[in-house]
Image 1 (cartoon, rainbow, N blue to C red):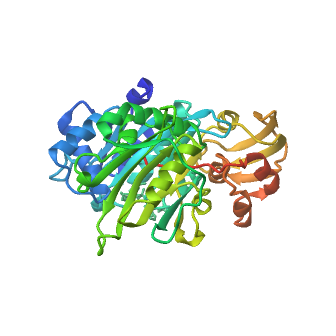
Image 2: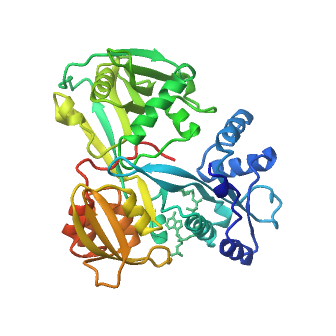
Image 3: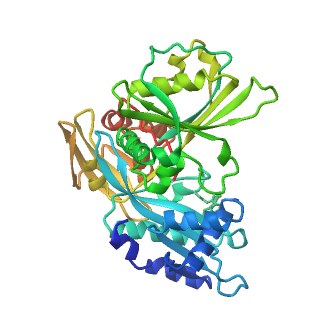
Length: 429
Ligand SMILES: CC(C)(COP(=O)(O)OP(=O)(O)OC[C@H]1O[C@@H](n2cnc3c(N)ncnc32)[C@H](O)[C@@H]1OP(=O)(O)O)[C@@H](O)C(=O)NCCC(=O)NCCS
């Protein structure tokens, strides 16, 4: 974690708002195990998880220590050492169209105790995060959300969507290309370094994915401490015919009523090549004694229907908003990404929180953008949340225009921003 981000003092405006409510906002010293344990336990409680056991706390402390960690305390209550509000943040590289990255202010663990809900505590926490990111010149903020109704008010827009699938493996047959390479069972400890390298390539290969910390990477390889299904996890690696590690799948098998009808819950499928992708999918679909494969957080373009004999045997069971993007610096964000079309537009961006509003002339030439502020009248006017929604290449411009959330030439905007491959974030953070 960037040292400045970790040590930057708490945001004054948020501290004032919280103090006016009779509460105390502060950074948590994550080297103080007792204080950090209370924070971790409050975070678990916020997401309705069980009380973390000592080994779970120890693991979480190791993994999360280097995030900027903020708490709200109510010193008037008997359990005052336990925070009633939590948030943490760090700077993560976000892959953008064209293959580069932009620094993203990643926000996680936003919780407010149900005893203190709807008093503006989350508002104070979020405002503080955005002002801190802005002060550190981080061009966008990002998060994944528990409920999609929460973050639009702070200028976030849904920028990637994720699909969930259930495949009836007794119904479908493999209809993809011949598969090769070598599949083998391994375990997370033995595969860790290799798995991290595979994940780095997966994350760099698609707009919307983010660079993963050891915590975020490790939990895709196997279960974390305290996982009640830990003993059921399996990890299978794929190596190319030349011996190059190109992918893995982590999954667990759940019992069915019938021994020949188990179901497989895929934790994560990583593939850096089509050969790895098809071999791993084929492996899952052809597992004996299994009747269903369930997988989540895939892209909206997951090619599964084309890989099976019976398209309706592979059902999309949901498509949901996944990564939310909040643009904080329009020129920095727009020049960080690449474009598949050249063109020119004046964007009128509105931002009720005052971070990114203004008129910007965007000129794209040779796939790269030049952005400058202008007084000219806009071709397109949109709230910053809509700009966040189209930023990574997603085809949202038309829908947003229909909803009145883009005014002006939405088609021109769409042509400039949309990418042939839709953005995807394949994990949570
Ligand atoms: C979501 C959560 C952090 C909100 O905290 P809070 O302190 O109650 O939020 P605030 O009082 O600052 O609310 C700000 C605004 O958001 C709205 N809001 C907050 N949470 C909402 C929710 N879950 N659904 C709908 N609206 C919500 C409030 O009504 C309020 O609206 P207003 O400005 O129009 O009055 C809290 O309910 C919580 O911890 N939930 C469980 C964990 C969780 O889901 N965290 C989010 C992780 S992504």
